[in-house]
Length: 325
Image 1 (spheres, helix red, strand yellow):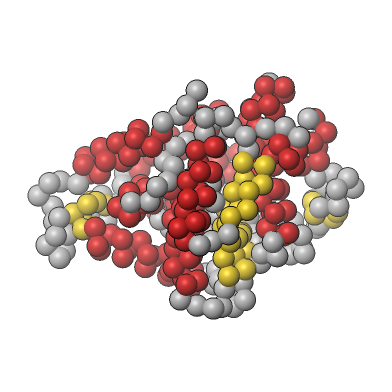
Image 2: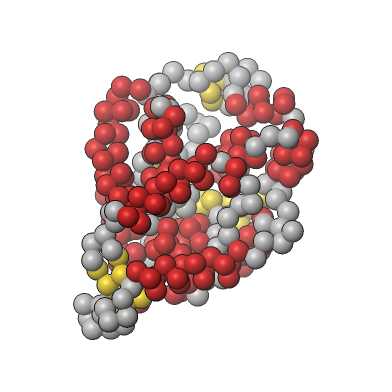
């Protein structure tokens, strides 16, 4: 089955923007507004909207010191709107400075009717930006595609996919000599993770959140950064649309199986009824995070008895999943 998500997603975003943006509302410059942000009552034209997104991304990078001199940044590039914007923004920064270098990594899980199209978008973008793209596949690393895993194990795709994808991204970045992996998590992604961990009572996962995703210092762990953490998903989509990026706006066909999908619907419902809810969740969590890390952070690290990768247990999660395959 071929999933034609692009037109569906663009149409849904346009409907949301049209619904949220009164025709009579103008930008502060008097120009036609392309978006009306209900949570702060701001209407912005195309130029001021694009500048605003770029300014907030750069401010977060400076505030959280996401980039350091000499960094070799590997962008996790799915070909979707968020990773596309992440690569574009970082490339704009790198072009103006010799302090950093940039490459991209695409992980092909092997999802028929979905991933082939997104990889195509990723390749095109990297050619246009003159950025090296490295593709790593589940088939080559684990012997099976995601579709084959789901079919053979009759299991939820997300049980395997998240763990295996992070492992492969980290391993590939390490081979490239990267010092940072930049991922395209937007504000919605971060808020969903916050709420999912809270509902599950999973504080050990909660301590890893933030613009600088926390990892125990180890030569085999490449730190992850999230330049889009304070940009709502609707705004990342609108930015890509206004810039005319040829990108995928689709969702993974397995996404509806995940717990996160249900959390997303809950948070979106609250945001629709009470504008600003997502910002409140994010800001409250940021105030709590230092205390959560102090209380729950597990600094003990050992080597996996099977593969030698860092883990908090005798055998890492990846090896346990490999055995089940």
